[in-house]
Amino acid sequence: MSSVDLRRRQLLIALAAATMLLAQLRPAVSQLKSEIEEFDARIGESEGQLEDLARQLQSARDRRRELEGEESGILHRLEQSEEELELAGRLVRGLEGRERRLTREIEALRATIGETEDDLKGRRLLLARRLRGIYLHGNSHPLQVLLGAESFTDAFSRLRGLRLVAAQDRDLYLGVRQTRRTLDDRHQALERTVVEVSGIREQAEREEAAIARRQQARQDLLEEVRAEAEAQQRLERELEQAAVELEALVAELERKRQETVARLQAERAAAEAAARASLPAIGSFGETPGTLPWPVQGEIISSFGMKKHPKYGTSTRNNGVDIRAPLGTPVRCVADGLVAYADRFLGYGKLILVEHGDGVYTLYGHLDQIGVTVGEVLAKGDVVGTVGDTGSLEGPKLHFEVRQEGAPVDPLSWLQGG
Image (cartoon, rainbow, N blue to C red):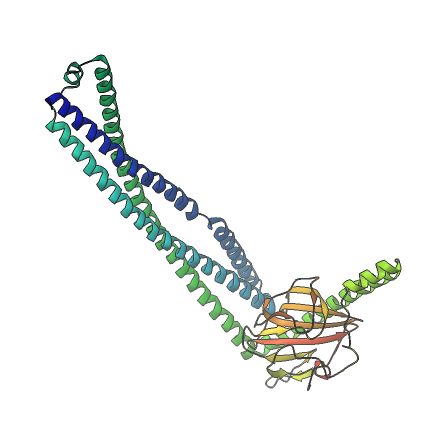
């Protein structure tokens, strides 16, 4: 075999090897780019929610300062403090969730960096081999290769081979540069994410400290109420006013119910039947005293009727019963009904009113979580929420009432074993 044929064969072998290696490396770069774009998209996915929650928390804090500055009522201050604690807790949980997501992204980013470094190492090795080949065969000038052709067809084939080799060399060099830039970008992204995680952790710690301060402030307020006779008397007046407002709410709901019933009675018989079906009947509620299930199992700490403060001698009326139970215990509806109210109410914290028909309502107060919505149809035994201490001065408990035509009646006369 002549020296020209030998060089041509070496050239073709080198070209084939370079083509195969580059074909293997290109998909890795494409996959890396896709992972980078996905990473960048996920980084800011929860920004809007956290910012909105932070604004709500700041608004609650501003309102609390306003209330304190005005020496507002104890119940207002207590309710505002609870709202602020709830928002702060949600913000901390959101920050912790974001920290966990970013930590996972850091792990994925480090793995991607490792793959990129391996990719770069392979490209550099290939480039080094190519440069060494060029050095060893540097005496073969392209013009010499063309002039050594035995025919026009041979010359054209050699020219095309030279062009392919030149293009592969250029792609190889540019690939090394691009991979190096990608690696630098990933290192910078890693550094930024690590700094961001640190900042989130610091913010979460600040919010946790703020929660601890507000919890202590809430506890101080409760101790103030228990210790100060004047504050106790003012609280009792506020509770009485809250009871009046609640009674007005029940009366308004009953008025609307009666208007609805009157309107339905004036319509066609078929429409009347359908509309009445949408208002759940109380069934045997008003006919079978002592048979209703308890809304929650626990100790009765305050019974129906007037009660006298053991220290100050002041009297207040309890329109229901207060049942002590662990925080988070499910609270159940005592009879079929329709949710008429589900929101905060001054003096009762998170409150649910259920209409049972015939002017009968049941009330569930101081809930930690409300699990139903207005207009929802309930069956006896359905969970409406959980025991809490919202609006409560005595820790976790359920305030339960039964009202007929707006007037409170003793719930124990309707409950099993009451």
